Image (cartoon, rainbow, N blue to C red; front, side, top):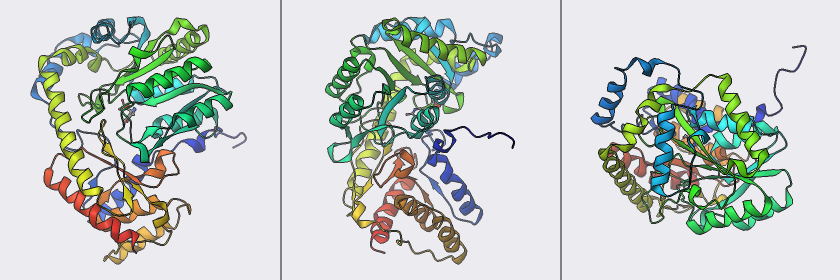
Length: 435
Ligand SMILES: Cc1ncc(COP(=O)(O)O)c(C=O)c1O
Protein backbone atom coordinates (compact mmCIF):
# COMPACT_ATOMS: atom_id res chain seq x y z
CA UNK A 1 0.00 0.00 0.00
CA UNK A 2 1.17 3.52 -0.74
CA UNK A 3 0.27 4.56 2.78
CA UNK A 4 0.45 2.52 5.96
CA UNK A 5 -3.07 1.29 6.72
CA UNK A 6 -2.30 -0.07 10.14
CA UNK A 7 -3.00 2.00 13.24
CA UNK A 8 -0.27 2.50 15.81
CA UNK A 9 -2.22 0.54 18.45
CA UNK A 10 -3.13 -2.40 16.21
CA UNK A 11 -0.68 -4.77 17.93
CA UNK A 12 -2.40 -4.14 21.25
CA UNK A 13 -5.62 -5.84 20.12
CA UNK A 14 -5.71 -9.43 21.30
CA UNK A 15 -8.41 -11.62 22.83
CA UNK A 16 -7.00 -14.94 23.93
CA UNK A 17 -10.48 -15.96 25.21
CA UNK A 18 -11.58 -16.49 21.62
CA UNK A 19 -8.20 -16.96 19.91
CA UNK A 20 -7.80 -20.32 21.58
CA UNK A 21 -11.05 -21.48 19.94
CA UNK A 22 -9.48 -22.02 16.49
CA UNK A 23 -7.17 -24.68 17.88
CA UNK A 24 -10.06 -26.31 19.76
CA UNK A 25 -12.16 -26.39 16.60
CA UNK A 26 -9.30 -28.11 14.71
CA UNK A 27 -9.13 -30.70 17.49
CA UNK A 28 -12.89 -31.17 17.29
CA UNK A 29 -12.64 -31.83 13.57
CA UNK A 30 -10.15 -34.60 14.43
CA UNK A 31 -12.65 -36.25 16.76
CA UNK A 32 -11.58 -34.74 20.11
CA UNK A 33 -14.54 -33.78 22.28
CA UNK A 34 -13.91 -30.35 23.79
CA UNK A 35 -15.29 -28.97 27.07
CA UNK A 36 -15.34 -25.22 26.46
CA UNK A 37 -14.27 -23.46 29.63
CA UNK A 38 -13.06 -20.33 27.86
CA UNK A 39 -16.11 -18.15 27.35
CA UNK A 40 -18.23 -16.46 30.01
CA UNK A 41 -21.54 -17.23 28.34
CA UNK A 42 -23.96 -18.93 30.76
CA UNK A 43 -26.39 -19.75 27.95
CA UNK A 44 -23.74 -21.52 25.86
CA UNK A 45 -22.93 -23.59 28.98
CA UNK A 46 -26.52 -24.77 29.36
CA UNK A 47 -28.17 -22.15 31.61
CA UNK A 48 -31.93 -22.41 31.10
CA UNK A 49 -33.73 -19.12 30.50
CA UNK A 50 -36.87 -19.01 32.70
CA UNK A 51 -40.12 -19.28 30.70
CA UNK A 52 -41.44 -16.01 32.19
CA UNK A 53 -38.44 -14.12 30.72
CA UNK A 54 -39.16 -15.62 27.31
CA UNK A 55 -42.86 -14.73 27.64
CA UNK A 56 -41.95 -11.12 28.52
CA UNK A 57 -39.78 -10.90 25.42
CA UNK A 58 -42.42 -12.56 23.22
CA UNK A 59 -45.02 -10.07 24.41
CA UNK A 60 -42.75 -7.15 23.48
CA UNK A 61 -42.65 -8.50 19.94
CA UNK A 62 -46.39 -7.95 19.55
CA UNK A 63 -45.75 -4.20 19.63
CA UNK A 64 -44.54 -2.83 16.26
CA UNK A 65 -42.58 -0.10 18.11
CA UNK A 66 -40.19 -2.84 19.23
CA UNK A 67 -39.00 -3.02 15.64
CA UNK A 68 -38.19 0.71 15.45
CA UNK A 69 -34.93 2.53 16.16
CA UNK A 70 -34.49 3.61 19.76
CA UNK A 71 -33.32 7.15 20.56
CA UNK A 72 -29.52 7.43 20.59
CA UNK A 73 -29.24 7.40 24.38
CA UNK A 74 -31.81 4.62 24.65
CA UNK A 75 -35.56 4.41 25.32
CA UNK A 76 -36.53 7.20 27.70
CA UNK A 77 -38.87 5.01 29.80
CA UNK A 78 -36.02 2.51 30.31
CA UNK A 79 -33.58 5.21 31.35
CA UNK A 80 -36.22 6.63 33.72
CA UNK A 81 -36.70 3.15 35.16
CA UNK A 82 -32.96 2.81 35.81
CA UNK A 83 -32.80 6.25 37.37
CA UNK A 84 -35.63 5.35 39.78
CA UNK A 85 -34.01 1.99 40.51
CA UNK A 86 -30.77 3.69 41.59
CA UNK A 87 -32.80 6.10 43.75
CA UNK A 88 -34.49 3.12 45.43
CA UNK A 89 -31.14 1.42 45.95
CA UNK A 90 -29.85 4.65 47.53
CA UNK A 91 -26.73 4.57 45.38
CA UNK A 92 -26.69 8.14 44.12
CA UNK A 93 -28.81 10.45 41.99
CA UNK A 94 -28.78 9.50 38.33
CA UNK A 95 -30.31 11.77 35.68
CA UNK A 96 -31.93 9.66 32.90
CA UNK A 97 -30.09 11.99 30.49
CA UNK A 98 -26.81 10.67 31.89
CA UNK A 99 -27.47 7.13 30.73
CA UNK A 100 -26.36 5.93 27.29
CA UNK A 101 -27.18 2.52 25.84
CA UNK A 102 -24.78 0.54 23.65
CA UNK A 103 -24.76 -2.64 21.60
CA UNK A 104 -23.35 -4.71 24.45
CA UNK A 105 -20.95 -3.41 27.04
CA UNK A 106 -18.11 -4.31 24.66
CA UNK A 107 -19.37 -1.49 22.42
CA UNK A 108 -19.45 0.91 25.38
CA UNK A 109 -15.89 -0.06 26.39
CA UNK A 110 -14.69 0.61 22.87
CA UNK A 111 -16.42 4.04 22.68
CA UNK A 112 -15.17 5.10 26.12
CA UNK A 113 -11.51 4.58 25.17
CA UNK A 114 -11.70 5.54 21.49
CA UNK A 115 -13.12 8.95 22.37
CA UNK A 116 -10.58 9.68 25.07
CA UNK A 117 -7.74 12.05 24.23
CA UNK A 118 -4.82 9.88 23.00
CA UNK A 119 -2.49 11.13 25.70
CA UNK A 120 -4.96 10.57 28.55
CA UNK A 121 -4.51 7.09 30.02
CA UNK A 122 -6.71 4.89 32.22
CA UNK A 123 -4.94 2.56 34.63
CA UNK A 124 -6.62 -0.82 35.11
CA UNK A 125 -6.23 -3.99 37.16
CA UNK A 126 -3.82 -6.80 36.28
CA UNK A 127 -4.77 -9.53 35.52
CA UNK A 128 -6.86 -7.47 33.12
CA UNK A 129 -10.03 -8.30 31.23
CA UNK A 130 -8.70 -7.92 27.66
CA UNK A 131 -11.64 -5.97 26.21
CA UNK A 132 -10.68 -3.08 28.49
CA UNK A 133 -6.90 -3.44 28.43
CA UNK A 134 -6.66 -3.91 24.66
CA UNK A 135 -9.06 -1.05 23.86
CA UNK A 136 -7.26 1.30 26.26
CA UNK A 137 -3.85 0.31 24.90
CA UNK A 138 -5.02 0.65 21.29
CA UNK A 139 -6.39 4.16 21.93
CA UNK A 140 -3.00 5.28 23.23
CA UNK A 141 -0.86 3.17 20.88
CA UNK A 142 1.02 1.91 23.89
CA UNK A 143 0.80 -0.90 26.49
CA UNK A 144 -2.01 -0.71 29.02
CA UNK A 145 -0.83 0.61 32.39
CA UNK A 146 -1.91 -1.61 35.28
CA UNK A 147 -2.07 -1.89 39.06
CA UNK A 148 -1.59 -5.29 40.60
CA UNK A 149 -4.25 -7.60 41.97
CA UNK A 150 -2.42 -9.78 44.45
CA UNK A 151 -3.23 -13.53 44.39
CA UNK A 152 -1.53 -13.95 47.77
CA UNK A 153 -3.99 -11.47 49.29
CA UNK A 154 -7.26 -12.82 47.93
CA UNK A 155 -6.65 -10.92 44.67
CA UNK A 156 -7.09 -7.58 46.45
CA UNK A 157 -5.62 -4.59 44.60
CA UNK A 158 -2.21 -3.35 45.64
CA UNK A 159 -3.17 0.22 46.55
CA UNK A 160 0.45 1.21 47.14
CA UNK A 161 1.23 0.22 43.54
CA UNK A 162 -1.86 2.11 42.30
CA UNK A 163 -1.06 5.29 44.22
CA UNK A 164 2.57 5.18 43.14
CA UNK A 165 1.73 4.82 39.45
CA UNK A 166 -0.89 7.57 39.64
CA UNK A 167 1.55 9.89 41.42
CA UNK A 168 4.42 9.40 38.98
CA UNK A 169 2.50 9.12 35.70
CA UNK A 170 1.05 12.47 34.71
CA UNK A 171 -0.77 10.94 31.73
CA UNK A 172 -3.06 8.96 34.00
CA UNK A 173 -6.49 10.56 33.83
CA UNK A 174 -8.65 7.71 35.07
CA UNK A 175 -8.78 4.54 37.15
CA UNK A 176 -10.67 1.45 36.01
CA UNK A 177 -12.08 -1.13 38.36
CA UNK A 178 -13.96 -4.26 37.32
CA UNK A 179 -16.22 -5.15 40.19
CA UNK A 180 -16.89 -8.10 40.61
CA UNK A 181 -13.73 -8.84 38.73
CA UNK A 182 -13.12 -10.88 35.62
CA UNK A 183 -10.96 -13.08 35.70
CA UNK A 184 -10.28 -13.30 39.47
CA UNK A 185 -13.82 -13.39 40.96
CA UNK A 186 -12.69 -10.79 43.52
CA UNK A 187 -15.13 -8.20 44.89
CA UNK A 188 -13.68 -4.81 45.83
CA UNK A 189 -14.37 -4.32 49.56
CA UNK A 190 -15.94 -1.04 50.68
CA UNK A 191 -12.72 0.19 52.31
CA UNK A 192 -10.71 -0.47 49.13
CA UNK A 193 -13.26 1.45 47.04
CA UNK A 194 -13.04 4.30 49.52
CA UNK A 195 -9.28 4.46 49.10
CA UNK A 196 -9.50 4.33 45.30
CA UNK A 197 -12.03 7.20 45.34
CA UNK A 198 -9.65 9.11 47.61
CA UNK A 199 -6.77 8.64 45.14
CA UNK A 200 -8.99 9.78 42.26
CA UNK A 201 -10.05 12.83 44.25
CA UNK A 202 -6.52 13.74 45.30
CA UNK A 203 -5.12 13.53 41.76
CA UNK A 204 -8.19 14.89 39.93
CA UNK A 205 -8.96 11.69 37.99
CA UNK A 206 -12.21 10.14 36.80
CA UNK A 207 -13.32 6.61 37.60
CA UNK A 208 -14.62 3.80 35.41
CA UNK A 209 -16.36 0.93 37.16
CA UNK A 210 -17.37 -2.06 35.07
CA UNK A 211 -20.20 -3.60 37.08
CA UNK A 212 -21.57 -6.03 34.53
CA UNK A 213 -21.43 -8.76 37.23
CA UNK A 214 -22.94 -6.55 39.96
CA UNK A 215 -25.75 -9.00 40.73
CA UNK A 216 -23.54 -12.06 40.64
CA UNK A 217 -21.96 -12.39 44.08
CA UNK A 218 -22.11 -15.32 46.45
CA UNK A 219 -19.08 -15.26 48.73
CA UNK A 220 -18.21 -13.60 52.01
CA UNK A 221 -17.74 -10.19 50.36
CA UNK A 222 -20.90 -8.32 49.31
CA UNK A 223 -20.87 -6.16 46.20
CA UNK A 224 -20.84 -2.41 46.92
CA UNK A 225 -21.86 -0.14 44.00
CA UNK A 226 -19.27 2.56 43.41
CA UNK A 227 -21.96 5.15 42.58
CA UNK A 228 -22.90 5.38 46.26
CA UNK A 229 -19.41 6.38 47.39
CA UNK A 230 -18.11 8.79 44.77
CA UNK A 231 -17.86 11.95 46.89
CA UNK A 232 -18.24 14.11 43.81
CA UNK A 233 -15.64 12.29 41.68
CA UNK A 234 -16.77 12.07 38.03
CA UNK A 235 -17.44 8.47 37.07
CA UNK A 236 -18.68 6.15 34.35
CA UNK A 237 -20.46 3.09 35.72
CA UNK A 238 -20.91 0.26 33.23
CA UNK A 239 -23.80 -2.20 33.38
CA UNK A 240 -25.30 -4.79 31.09
CA UNK A 241 -27.74 -7.64 30.56
CA UNK A 242 -25.29 -10.22 29.14
CA UNK A 243 -24.36 -11.93 32.40
CA UNK A 244 -27.37 -11.09 34.52
CA UNK A 245 -30.46 -12.16 32.59
CA UNK A 246 -28.31 -13.82 31.09
CA UNK A 247 -28.72 -12.57 27.53
CA UNK A 248 -25.35 -11.97 25.85
CA UNK A 249 -26.89 -12.30 22.41
CA UNK A 250 -29.10 -9.25 23.04
CA UNK A 251 -25.98 -7.04 22.83
CA UNK A 252 -27.23 -4.65 25.49
CA UNK A 253 -25.06 -2.67 27.86
CA UNK A 254 -25.16 0.91 29.11
CA UNK A 255 -23.16 3.55 30.94
CA UNK A 256 -24.42 5.59 33.89
CA UNK A 257 -22.53 8.86 34.22
CA UNK A 258 -22.18 10.43 37.67
CA UNK A 259 -20.96 13.92 38.60
CA UNK A 260 -20.65 14.87 34.94
CA UNK A 261 -20.92 18.57 35.61
CA UNK A 262 -18.28 18.61 38.33
CA UNK A 263 -15.68 19.00 35.60
CA UNK A 264 -16.27 20.68 32.22
CA UNK A 265 -13.59 18.59 30.50
CA UNK A 266 -15.20 15.39 31.73
CA UNK A 267 -18.62 16.68 30.56
CA UNK A 268 -17.17 17.41 27.09
CA UNK A 269 -15.63 13.93 26.95
CA UNK A 270 -19.02 12.34 27.76
CA UNK A 271 -20.60 14.44 25.01
CA UNK A 272 -18.01 13.05 22.57
CA UNK A 273 -19.00 9.49 23.56
CA UNK A 274 -22.66 10.38 23.02
CA UNK A 275 -21.93 12.05 19.67
CA UNK A 276 -19.98 8.99 18.53
CA UNK A 277 -22.99 6.83 19.40
CA UNK A 278 -25.23 9.24 17.50
CA UNK A 279 -23.25 8.54 14.30
CA UNK A 280 -24.36 4.92 14.71
CA UNK A 281 -27.96 6.10 15.26
CA UNK A 282 -28.84 3.90 18.25
CA UNK A 283 -28.54 0.55 20.01
CA UNK A 284 -30.71 -2.58 20.03
CA UNK A 285 -34.33 -1.73 20.93
CA UNK A 286 -35.75 -5.10 22.05
CA UNK A 287 -33.64 -5.62 25.21
CA UNK A 288 -34.20 -1.99 26.26
CA UNK A 289 -37.93 -2.48 25.82
CA UNK A 290 -38.09 -5.51 28.14
CA UNK A 291 -35.41 -4.47 30.66
CA UNK A 292 -37.79 -2.72 33.13
CA UNK A 293 -40.25 -5.62 33.04
CA UNK A 294 -37.59 -8.28 33.62
CA UNK A 295 -35.65 -6.42 36.33
CA UNK A 296 -38.79 -5.49 38.28
CA UNK A 297 -40.51 -8.88 38.02
CA UNK A 298 -40.91 -10.42 41.51
CA UNK A 299 -39.53 -13.70 40.09
CA UNK A 300 -36.26 -12.05 39.02
CA UNK A 301 -34.73 -11.79 42.51
CA UNK A 302 -35.49 -15.44 43.22
CA UNK A 303 -34.03 -16.48 39.89
CA UNK A 304 -30.81 -14.50 40.53
CA UNK A 305 -30.54 -16.08 43.97
CA UNK A 306 -30.82 -19.57 42.51
CA UNK A 307 -27.97 -18.78 40.12
CA UNK A 308 -25.82 -17.34 42.94
CA UNK A 309 -26.40 -20.53 44.93
CA UNK A 310 -25.29 -22.65 41.97
CA UNK A 311 -22.09 -20.60 41.48
CA UNK A 312 -21.30 -20.76 45.17
CA UNK A 313 -21.68 -24.54 45.14
CA UNK A 314 -19.36 -24.86 42.16
CA UNK A 315 -16.86 -22.38 43.64
CA UNK A 316 -16.73 -24.48 46.83
CA UNK A 317 -16.32 -27.73 44.91
CA UNK A 318 -13.62 -26.35 42.60
CA UNK A 319 -11.70 -24.73 45.45
CA UNK A 320 -11.78 -27.96 47.45
CA UNK A 321 -10.18 -29.90 44.58
CA UNK A 322 -7.79 -27.31 43.17
CA UNK A 323 -6.26 -26.07 46.43
CA UNK A 324 -4.85 -29.59 47.04
CA UNK A 325 -2.84 -29.56 43.81
CA UNK A 326 0.81 -28.84 44.45
CA UNK A 327 2.33 -26.07 42.37
CA UNK A 328 -0.83 -23.98 42.01
CA UNK A 329 -2.55 -21.56 44.36
CA UNK A 330 -6.22 -20.76 44.11
CA UNK A 331 -8.47 -18.13 45.71
CA UNK A 332 -12.14 -18.98 46.10
CA UNK A 333 -14.10 -16.44 44.03
CA UNK A 334 -16.82 -14.27 45.62
CA UNK A 335 -18.39 -12.86 42.49
CA UNK A 336 -18.70 -13.13 38.68
CA UNK A 337 -18.33 -16.74 37.56
CA UNK A 338 -14.63 -17.35 37.03
CA UNK A 339 -11.86 -18.99 38.94
CA UNK A 340 -8.18 -18.38 38.27
CA UNK A 341 -5.56 -20.80 39.60
CA UNK A 342 -1.98 -19.45 39.53
CA UNK A 343 1.12 -21.59 38.92
CA UNK A 344 4.27 -21.40 41.00
CA UNK A 345 6.48 -19.92 38.23
CA UNK A 346 9.54 -21.84 39.46
CA UNK A 347 7.83 -25.09 38.45
CA UNK A 348 7.16 -24.15 34.81
CA UNK A 349 9.56 -24.72 31.92
CA UNK A 350 9.38 -24.44 28.11
CA UNK A 351 9.85 -28.20 27.66
CA UNK A 352 6.89 -29.53 29.68
CA UNK A 353 4.29 -31.66 27.94
CA UNK A 354 1.36 -33.99 28.52
CA UNK A 355 1.25 -37.47 26.99
CA UNK A 356 -0.84 -37.60 23.80
CA UNK A 357 -1.37 -40.99 22.20
CA UNK A 358 -2.62 -39.80 18.81
CA UNK A 359 0.47 -38.97 16.74
CA UNK A 360 -1.29 -36.43 14.50
CA UNK A 361 -2.67 -34.48 17.47
CA UNK A 362 0.70 -34.60 19.21
CA UNK A 363 2.41 -33.22 16.10
CA UNK A 364 -0.24 -30.52 15.81
CA UNK A 365 0.19 -29.26 19.37
CA UNK A 366 3.99 -29.46 19.11
CA UNK A 367 3.89 -27.33 15.99
CA UNK A 368 1.51 -24.86 17.62
CA UNK A 369 3.49 -24.36 20.83
CA UNK A 370 6.72 -23.94 18.83
CA UNK A 371 5.26 -20.62 17.61
CA UNK A 372 4.74 -19.29 21.17
CA UNK A 373 7.02 -16.72 22.76
CA UNK A 374 9.41 -18.27 25.35
CA UNK A 375 7.63 -16.61 28.27
CA UNK A 376 4.16 -17.91 27.30
CA UNK A 377 4.48 -20.88 29.62
CA UNK A 378 0.85 -21.01 30.74
CA UNK A 379 -0.29 -20.81 27.12
CA UNK A 380 1.80 -23.91 26.47
CA UNK A 381 0.03 -25.66 29.35
CA UNK A 382 -3.42 -24.63 28.06
CA UNK A 383 -2.78 -25.99 24.56
CA UNK A 384 -1.39 -29.29 25.87
CA UNK A 385 -4.37 -29.57 28.22
CA UNK A 386 -6.72 -29.12 25.31
CA UNK A 387 -4.90 -31.58 23.05
CA UNK A 388 -4.50 -34.24 25.76
CA UNK A 389 -7.80 -33.94 27.64
CA UNK A 390 -10.12 -31.85 25.46
CA UNK A 391 -10.42 -29.16 28.13
CA UNK A 392 -10.27 -25.56 26.89
CA UNK A 393 -9.24 -22.98 29.52
CA UNK A 394 -7.78 -19.50 28.94
CA UNK A 395 -4.10 -18.96 29.80
CA UNK A 396 -3.52 -16.04 32.14
CA UNK A 397 -0.98 -14.51 29.74
CA UNK A 398 -4.05 -13.40 27.77
CA UNK A 399 -4.96 -11.09 30.69
CA UNK A 400 -2.06 -8.65 30.62
CA UNK A 401 -0.13 -10.05 33.58
CA UNK A 402 3.26 -11.56 34.40
CA UNK A 403 1.56 -14.22 36.52
CA UNK A 404 1.18 -17.71 35.10
CA UNK A 405 -2.13 -19.48 35.44
CA UNK A 406 -5.42 -20.01 33.69
CA UNK A 407 -9.05 -18.97 33.91
CA UNK A 408 -11.89 -21.46 34.06
CA UNK A 409 -15.59 -20.81 34.65
CA UNK A 410 -18.21 -21.86 37.19
CA UNK A 411 -20.82 -22.12 34.45
CA UNK A 412 -20.96 -25.81 33.65
CA UNK A 413 -24.57 -26.85 34.19
CA UNK A 414 -23.95 -30.58 33.94
CA UNK A 415 -22.64 -31.68 37.38
CA UNK A 416 -20.93 -34.74 35.90
CA UNK A 417 -19.05 -32.66 33.36
CA UNK A 418 -18.04 -30.15 36.05
CA UNK A 419 -16.77 -32.92 38.31
CA UNK A 420 -14.90 -34.49 35.41
CA UNK A 421 -13.33 -31.10 34.58
CA UNK A 422 -11.99 -30.83 38.12
CA UNK A 423 -10.70 -34.39 37.99
CA UNK A 424 -8.89 -33.67 34.72
CA UNK A 425 -7.20 -30.64 36.28
CA UNK A 426 -6.23 -32.64 39.37
CA UNK A 427 -4.56 -35.20 37.09
CA UNK A 428 -3.19 -33.00 34.30
CA UNK A 429 -1.51 -30.27 36.38
CA UNK A 430 0.77 -32.57 38.43
CA UNK A 431 1.52 -34.63 35.30
CA UNK A 432 2.46 -31.50 33.35
CA UNK A 433 4.54 -29.95 36.12
CA UNK A 434 6.53 -33.14 36.66
CA UNK A 435 7.06 -33.89 32.94
C1 LIG B 1 -15.94 -7.44 32.76
C2 LIG B 1 -16.66 -7.48 31.47
N1 LIG B 1 -17.02 -6.33 30.87
C3 LIG B 1 -17.67 -6.32 29.69
C4 LIG B 1 -17.97 -7.48 29.04
C5 LIG B 1 -18.66 -7.41 27.70
O1 LIG B 1 -20.01 -7.67 27.85
P1 LIG B 1 -21.08 -7.55 26.67
O2 LIG B 1 -21.54 -8.94 26.38
O3 LIG B 1 -22.18 -6.70 27.22
O4 LIG B 1 -20.40 -6.92 25.50
C6 LIG B 1 -17.61 -8.72 29.60
C7 LIG B 1 -17.87 -9.98 28.89
O5 LIG B 1 -17.39 -11.04 29.22
C8 LIG B 1 -16.93 -8.71 30.85
O6 LIG B 1 -16.55 -9.85 31.44
